[in-house]
Amino acid sequence: MNFLAIIGRVVLALLAEIGRLSLFIWQSVSHVFRPPFFWRLVAQQMMRIGYFSLPVVALTAFFTGGALALQIYYGGNEFNSESIVATIVALGITRELGPVLGGLMVAGRVSAAIAAELGTMRVTEQIDALTTLSTNPYKYLVVPRVVAAVLTLPLLVFVADIIGIMGGFVVGTQSLDFNAGVYIKNTADFLKFDDVMSGLIKAGVFGFIIATMGCFHGFNSKGGAQGVGRATTNAVVTASILILAANYVMTSLLFAN
Amino acid sequence: MSDAKIELRNVHKRFGSKVVLDGINLTVPKGQSLVVIGGSGTGKSVMIKCVLGIIRPDRGEIFVDGKNVLKMDQGQREAVLRKFGMLFQGAALFDSLAVWENVAFGLIQGRRMKRKAAREIAIEKLAKVGLGPEVGELYPAELSGGMQKRVGLARAIAADPEIIFFDEPTTGLDPITADVINELIVDRVKDLGATTLSITHDMSSVRKIADRVAMIYKGKIIWEGPRDRIDDSGNDYVDQFIHGRAEGPIGMDVLKP
Image 1: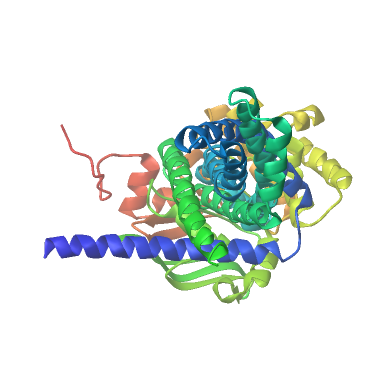
Image 2: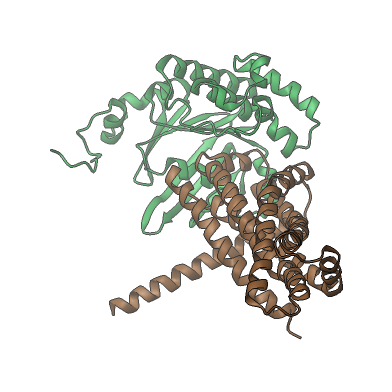
């Protein structure tokens, strides 16, 4: 009986958490479309979430593109390797690795920062103070972050796509002795608009996940410094897992036929 | 009861299995200063947050100017919140904003006032709590605890509220600074003719700012009366509290060595 009780308790806690999260998302999204709008804050968050994540995302993409090129070259046969490396690097980066690795890196950087900031505001009653100053905390804190993340993540991933393909190009031409012109031609021939687009759509969804998880855990943190620390960890872990899960679902939907 | 500014009727709130408010009945008459005293963890803060709508009570009714705030939609509630100002225990200043922006926050964000006009009001309000205009340029982290409380008070009165809540206004301050804050509270409340509800466990603060005093114990109001009567209340709980005795009807859950 005790065992069943444990299962029951876990399921109930999980359902309660899902309910809380759904309410939170509903509150946040409904405020996106209702005035007043805080444009200045959106711009500020776009700087913080997007612009300052550029170095991290660019380095991730560059090394991933390079490593991918090497793996395909070593794993594949010698015939045709010149065209296969270019094609698979381009497709792999734009469809999967660019958005997923970029998303995970930004999740680590941004979800944590958001959760820590809002968590501290929660435990020092700053979020309550907003309410008493006739300012809706969802509108003032959550909406700018979510909007900024959804807008900037695709831009970041687009940059990551270019740099990732460039990483493959650099490795291909420098250490695998491919012809630069042929490499570029192969990339351009096989890469389609849909490949890039699917990655950017994913990136938008990942941006939503990253900002929402940071805000949700920050908003619900309690119990001082330790609570803020826990919120930060939870934000990064849940954002990362949700990104991977959402990526699988979207891949199966976007490439179904 | 036509002169009641705030009225709580049979308000209940529990967190999990812990009953925090167990049927609170309390009336704050218009233009009066009511101070609620009680030990830590007796539900004082929760009670105030219920009135502000930050926490939703499980049962009961809360009236502000004769209207039940628990039955209002979001728009009506925000209109009611404009009548309020609040000074938080830890001041709860926004640390990303300069002092003057903190004071002007409710005017700029809540009331869409132009920044320049709001800044002038902010500086005027800072002067009213004894702070010069140069303090307006500083950030909250650069201020001492007493100065933060003053800024918090300036922010609470910035929009000329009809009702002001004080959450432990003197906690954590030295006796002299505490007295300065108490005097500022009395003076500013008199200027505005505001109705105030304060919670504290500092008896010198009670004697200075209260018109009426109520004592909360185990989620209930156990005594209420004018300030002059607290020394001969005839209530053992109140006696024990105001004299700060360990022995008495209020048992502390402390293991004796």
